[in-house]
Length: 346
Image (cartoon, rainbow, N blue to C red; front, side, top):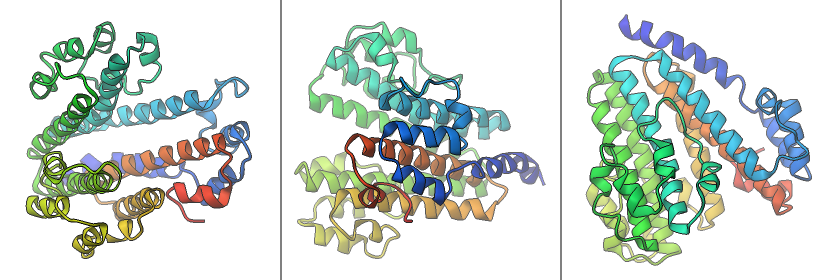
């Protein structure tokens, strides 16, 4: 009974939020817009983003502004869900939020490497929140990557990064960013251990799926575009996935061609994602796969943590779709081509 009481309110909130998401007709109308301004006009006047955009002048807003606005809106919704949880469940939601704080940390570190000003960096950050584990203002005031990493002493990130700060080459930045991703998975796995058996299993399966998709994308891009050596590919994979053991990941890293890659994953749920080699269609199929996978949890409406996590994933995909559509207007991509870059098929 405790589980029902704990999750009934959050599930009701999630169902209400799902009802505000874009319909297929709204996606279609956004895709048909001829330019950025008409796209934002439709978002403001014909979707539930109208309330968000009410305070903004559409005549002066530009693509970069809107992208940050949407990201920050997502984070504001995310932050509100914390109020529904306490104890170990609250710790899990906070650990999930670390992913977005890490994205901001990556922006800060890379921007310091590029010599950008604090104001420039500030305008790109999305995850300032009561859930933060770091002091944004303090980090922004520091001069370079080494100082930023040193400034993380006492945080959940410092132990993983303390030996990496002296290498500020492009490869060094990549290692820093990868270590940050490891922090997220390690922290969340640690918090999931404290949940009851049902929610621990749900949480670990969802986290494992995320690890699988990240690993497949990393290995695919590493082999197809960057020709990264197998041992380096393997060193940067995330273990304890949903369908892939450590040994299976190793095999994927050491295959010689993409036909072998597809053969190795043909009996997994991800086979369809990589049936073709076009990267844009892969990204589309990945989003479609996630929507289908997490949509099942949303339809089942079980009284466990799956509902809120699934909504946060699916809503994140909607934000990415909107940003993709906005980006298309920049390059005058028509609807027939543009649909290949988003998670819906109309």
